[in-house]
Image (tube, rainbow, N blue to C red; front, side, top):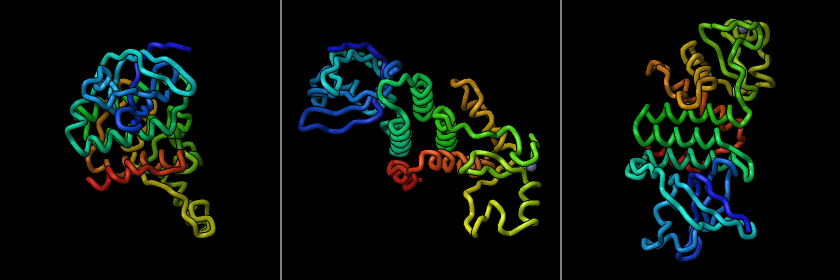
Amino acid sequence: MTEIKQNGLVIGERELGDNDKLLTILTERFGKLCVIGKGVKSVRNRHMATTQLFSYASFGLRKRGNFYYITDSDLIENYYDIRNDIQKLALASYICDVVCDVTAEDKEDDEILRLTLNTLFAIAKNIKPMKIVKACFELRIASECGFMPDLAACSKCGETAPKACILDILDGVIVCDKCRKEAFSANVENEFFPNGYQKPIVTLSISSLMAMRYVISSEQERFLSFNLGEDEWDDFCEACEKYLLNQLERGFYSLDFYKTLL
Ligand SMILES: [Zn+2]
Protein backbone atom coordinates (compact mmCIF):
# COMPACT_ATOMS: atom_id res chain seq x y z
CA MET A 1 0.00 0.00 0.00
CA THR A 2 1.62 3.24 -1.14
CA GLU A 3 0.95 6.49 0.63
CA ILE A 4 1.89 9.83 -0.94
CA LYS A 5 1.62 13.51 -0.02
CA GLN A 6 1.10 15.79 -3.03
CA ASN A 7 -0.24 19.19 -3.98
CA GLY A 8 -2.86 18.62 -6.65
CA LEU A 9 -5.61 20.29 -8.66
CA VAL A 10 -9.00 18.63 -9.16
CA ILE A 11 -9.44 18.69 -12.97
CA GLY A 12 -12.34 16.23 -13.24
CA GLU A 13 -15.15 14.91 -11.06
CA ARG A 14 -17.83 12.30 -11.51
CA GLU A 15 -20.50 11.22 -9.09
CA LEU A 16 -20.11 7.72 -7.73
CA GLY A 17 -23.28 6.52 -6.05
CA ASP A 18 -25.01 8.76 -3.53
CA ASN A 19 -22.05 9.87 -1.46
CA ASP A 20 -18.80 9.32 -3.32
CA LYS A 21 -16.93 10.97 -6.18
CA LEU A 22 -14.43 9.73 -8.72
CA LEU A 23 -11.91 12.55 -9.06
CA THR A 24 -9.13 13.27 -11.51
CA ILE A 25 -6.36 15.11 -9.69
CA LEU A 26 -3.30 16.55 -11.45
CA THR A 27 -0.37 16.35 -9.05
CA GLU A 28 3.10 17.87 -9.08
CA ARG A 29 5.15 14.68 -9.22
CA PHE A 30 2.82 11.84 -10.20
CA GLY A 31 0.84 13.42 -13.04
CA LYS A 32 -2.87 12.68 -13.34
CA LEU A 33 -4.32 10.37 -10.68
CA CYS A 34 -7.71 8.63 -10.35
CA VAL A 35 -8.89 9.28 -6.82
CA ILE A 36 -11.98 7.98 -5.05
CA GLY A 37 -13.43 10.46 -2.58
CA LYS A 38 -15.39 8.40 -0.06
CA GLY A 39 -18.39 10.29 1.33
CA VAL A 40 -17.11 13.62 0.00
CA LYS A 41 -20.51 14.68 -1.35
CA SER A 42 -21.74 15.13 2.19
CA VAL A 43 -21.40 18.67 3.62
CA ARG A 44 -20.25 17.11 6.87
CA ASN A 45 -17.30 15.36 5.19
CA ARG A 46 -13.94 16.95 6.09
CA HIS A 47 -12.75 16.60 2.47
CA MET A 48 -15.86 18.21 0.95
CA ALA A 49 -14.18 21.56 0.12
CA THR A 50 -10.98 20.08 -1.30
CA THR A 51 -12.77 17.65 -3.61
CA GLN A 52 -14.65 20.20 -5.75
CA LEU A 53 -13.70 20.82 -9.38
CA PHE A 54 -10.88 23.47 -9.54
CA SER A 55 -9.83 22.94 -5.91
CA TYR A 56 -6.08 23.07 -5.41
CA ALA A 57 -5.05 21.34 -2.22
CA SER A 58 -2.40 19.38 -0.41
CA PHE A 59 -3.58 15.77 -0.49
CA GLY A 60 -2.54 12.69 1.44
CA LEU A 61 -3.36 9.75 -0.85
CA ARG A 62 -3.22 5.99 -0.34
CA LYS A 63 -3.13 3.63 -3.31
CA ARG A 64 -5.26 0.52 -3.33
CA GLY A 65 -5.67 -1.39 -6.62
CA ASN A 66 -6.02 1.05 -9.51
CA PHE A 67 -7.25 3.94 -7.39
CA TYR A 68 -6.06 6.34 -4.76
CA TYR A 69 -8.11 7.18 -1.67
CA ILE A 70 -7.93 10.45 0.27
CA THR A 71 -6.46 10.14 3.76
CA ASP A 72 -5.85 13.84 4.36
CA SER A 73 -6.43 17.19 2.61
CA ASP A 74 -5.79 20.90 3.14
CA LEU A 75 -7.25 23.50 0.80
CA ILE A 76 -4.73 25.88 -0.80
CA GLU A 77 -6.97 27.68 -3.33
CA ASN A 78 -10.54 27.09 -4.56
CA TYR A 79 -10.86 29.78 -7.31
CA TYR A 80 -14.09 30.92 -5.74
CA ASP A 81 -14.57 33.70 -8.34
CA ILE A 82 -14.82 31.12 -11.11
CA ARG A 83 -17.78 29.35 -9.50
CA ASN A 84 -19.90 32.52 -9.39
CA ASP A 85 -19.82 33.27 -13.10
CA ILE A 86 -21.24 30.87 -15.69
CA GLN A 87 -18.91 32.06 -18.45
CA LYS A 88 -15.81 31.69 -16.28
CA LEU A 89 -17.05 28.30 -15.12
CA ALA A 90 -17.54 27.14 -18.70
CA LEU A 91 -14.09 28.32 -19.79
CA ALA A 92 -12.39 26.79 -16.73
CA SER A 93 -14.17 23.48 -17.43
CA TYR A 94 -12.83 23.49 -21.00
CA ILE A 95 -9.31 24.28 -19.66
CA CYS A 96 -9.53 21.27 -17.31
CA ASP A 97 -10.86 19.01 -20.09
CA VAL A 98 -7.87 19.90 -22.27
CA VAL A 99 -5.49 19.25 -19.36
CA CYS A 100 -7.18 15.89 -18.71
CA ASP A 101 -6.70 14.99 -22.37
CA VAL A 102 -2.99 15.80 -22.58
CA THR A 103 -1.76 14.47 -19.22
CA ALA A 104 -1.02 10.90 -18.14
CA GLU A 105 -0.66 8.95 -14.93
CA ASP A 106 2.82 8.62 -13.43
CA LYS A 107 4.28 11.29 -15.67
CA GLU A 108 5.64 14.36 -13.92
CA ASP A 109 3.79 17.34 -15.39
CA ASP A 110 4.77 20.21 -13.17
CA GLU A 111 4.87 22.68 -16.09
CA ILE A 112 1.33 21.81 -17.14
CA LEU A 113 0.09 21.99 -13.55
CA ARG A 114 1.63 25.46 -13.12
CA LEU A 115 0.24 26.61 -16.48
CA THR A 116 -3.23 25.42 -15.45
CA LEU A 117 -3.04 27.14 -12.06
CA ASN A 118 -1.86 30.39 -13.68
CA THR A 119 -4.66 30.18 -16.24
CA LEU A 120 -7.37 29.54 -13.63
CA PHE A 121 -6.01 32.44 -11.56
CA ALA A 122 -6.15 34.75 -14.61
CA ILE A 123 -9.75 33.72 -15.32
CA ALA A 124 -10.79 34.14 -11.67
CA LYS A 125 -9.14 37.53 -11.25
CA ASN A 126 -9.86 39.01 -14.73
CA ILE A 127 -6.14 39.49 -15.42
CA LYS A 128 -6.90 39.69 -19.17
CA PRO A 129 -10.05 39.36 -21.30
CA MET A 130 -11.20 35.75 -21.16
CA LYS A 131 -10.78 35.14 -24.91
CA ILE A 132 -7.11 36.18 -24.68
CA VAL A 133 -6.45 33.99 -21.62
CA LYS A 134 -8.10 31.08 -23.46
CA ALA A 135 -6.01 31.60 -26.60
CA CYS A 136 -2.72 31.94 -24.68
CA PHE A 137 -3.47 28.77 -22.72
CA GLU A 138 -4.28 26.88 -25.94
CA LEU A 139 -1.06 27.89 -27.65
CA ARG A 140 1.10 27.39 -24.58
CA ILE A 141 -0.27 23.96 -23.69
CA ALA A 142 0.14 22.79 -27.29
CA SER A 143 3.79 23.85 -26.99
CA GLU A 144 4.21 22.16 -23.59
CA CYS A 145 2.91 18.89 -25.08
CA GLY A 146 5.53 18.83 -27.81
CA PHE A 147 3.58 20.65 -30.54
CA MET A 148 5.40 23.97 -30.42
CA PRO A 149 4.84 25.71 -33.79
CA ASP A 150 7.88 27.07 -35.63
CA LEU A 151 7.12 30.79 -35.75
CA ALA A 152 10.69 32.07 -36.08
CA ALA A 153 10.69 32.69 -39.84
CA CYS A 154 8.83 32.06 -43.10
CA SER A 155 9.29 28.36 -43.84
CA LYS A 156 9.90 29.16 -47.56
CA CYS A 157 12.23 32.17 -47.65
CA GLY A 158 13.41 32.57 -44.06
CA GLU A 159 12.00 36.12 -43.64
CA THR A 160 11.86 36.72 -39.88
CA ALA A 161 9.71 39.88 -39.88
CA PRO A 162 7.02 39.50 -42.56
CA LYS A 163 4.38 42.29 -42.67
CA ALA A 164 1.76 39.58 -42.77
CA CYS A 165 1.85 35.82 -42.99
CA ILE A 166 -0.31 32.74 -42.67
CA LEU A 167 -0.05 30.06 -40.02
CA ASP A 168 -0.23 26.61 -41.56
CA ILE A 169 -2.39 24.94 -38.90
CA LEU A 170 -1.46 21.36 -39.81
CA ASP A 171 2.31 21.75 -40.10
CA GLY A 172 2.73 24.48 -37.48
CA VAL A 173 4.83 26.75 -39.70
CA ILE A 174 4.38 30.25 -41.09
CA VAL A 175 4.53 31.33 -44.74
CA CYS A 176 5.02 35.04 -45.50
CA ASP A 177 2.60 36.95 -47.72
CA LYS A 178 5.14 37.29 -50.51
CA CYS A 179 5.83 33.55 -50.76
CA ARG A 180 2.15 32.77 -50.51
CA LYS A 181 1.28 35.15 -53.37
CA GLU A 182 4.07 33.72 -55.51
CA ALA A 183 2.79 30.20 -54.89
CA PHE A 184 -0.73 31.30 -55.82
CA SER A 185 0.23 33.00 -59.08
CA ALA A 186 2.52 30.12 -60.12
CA ASN A 187 -0.15 27.46 -59.93
CA VAL A 188 -3.75 27.28 -58.75
CA GLU A 189 -3.19 23.69 -57.68
CA ASN A 190 -0.53 24.73 -55.22
CA GLU A 191 0.08 23.35 -51.78
CA PHE A 192 -2.57 25.49 -50.12
CA PHE A 193 -5.19 24.12 -52.47
CA PRO A 194 -4.07 20.56 -53.28
CA ASN A 195 -6.85 18.91 -55.30
CA GLY A 196 -9.09 21.83 -54.51
CA TYR A 197 -8.93 21.09 -50.79
CA GLN A 198 -7.86 24.06 -48.76
CA LYS A 199 -5.33 23.43 -46.04
CA PRO A 200 -6.45 25.05 -42.77
CA ILE A 201 -4.68 28.38 -42.43
CA VAL A 202 -5.11 31.56 -40.42
CA THR A 203 -3.85 34.95 -41.57
CA LEU A 204 -1.66 36.74 -39.04
CA SER A 205 -0.39 40.30 -38.84
CA ILE A 206 3.13 40.91 -37.59
CA SER A 207 1.74 41.97 -34.17
CA SER A 208 -0.29 38.77 -33.79
CA LEU A 209 2.76 36.77 -34.84
CA MET A 210 4.90 38.58 -32.25
CA ALA A 211 2.28 37.92 -29.58
CA MET A 212 2.28 34.19 -30.45
CA ARG A 213 6.08 34.10 -30.36
CA TYR A 214 5.93 35.72 -26.91
CA VAL A 215 3.41 33.20 -25.56
CA ILE A 216 5.48 30.16 -26.54
CA SER A 217 8.83 31.54 -25.38
CA SER A 218 8.13 33.61 -22.27
CA GLU A 219 8.65 32.58 -18.66
CA GLN A 220 5.68 30.47 -17.58
CA GLU A 221 4.50 33.02 -14.95
CA ARG A 222 4.60 35.86 -17.50
CA PHE A 223 2.94 34.18 -20.47
CA LEU A 224 0.05 36.68 -20.43
CA SER A 225 2.21 39.80 -20.05
CA PHE A 226 2.04 41.28 -23.56
CA ASN A 227 -0.10 43.82 -25.38
CA LEU A 228 -2.02 43.22 -28.57
CA GLY A 229 -4.39 45.73 -30.19
CA GLU A 230 -8.05 44.78 -29.91
CA ASP A 231 -8.49 44.71 -33.70
CA GLU A 232 -5.98 41.82 -33.82
CA TRP A 233 -7.68 39.65 -31.20
CA ASP A 234 -9.89 37.67 -33.57
CA ASP A 235 -7.06 36.35 -35.75
CA PHE A 236 -4.87 35.64 -32.74
CA CYS A 237 -7.64 33.73 -30.94
CA GLU A 238 -8.68 31.82 -34.05
CA ALA A 239 -5.08 30.77 -34.73
CA CYS A 240 -4.49 29.52 -31.16
CA GLU A 241 -7.75 27.56 -30.90
CA LYS A 242 -7.51 25.97 -34.34
CA TYR A 243 -3.88 25.08 -33.78
CA LEU A 244 -4.50 23.25 -30.49
CA LEU A 245 -7.63 21.38 -31.67
CA ASN A 246 -5.88 20.29 -34.86
CA GLN A 247 -2.86 19.01 -32.97
CA LEU A 248 -5.06 17.10 -30.51
CA GLU A 249 -7.30 15.92 -33.38
CA ARG A 250 -10.47 16.40 -31.38
CA GLY A 251 -13.08 18.87 -30.15
CA PHE A 252 -14.53 19.39 -26.66
CA TYR A 253 -18.18 19.59 -25.57
CA SER A 254 -17.14 22.05 -22.87
CA LEU A 255 -15.71 24.33 -25.59
CA ASP A 256 -18.96 24.12 -27.59
CA PHE A 257 -20.88 25.01 -24.43
CA TYR A 258 -18.57 27.96 -23.65
CA LYS A 259 -19.21 29.29 -27.15
CA THR A 260 -22.98 29.18 -26.68
CA LEU A 261 -22.51 31.73 -23.85
CA LEU A 262 -20.62 34.30 -25.93
ZN1 LIG B 1 8.56 33.86 -47.36
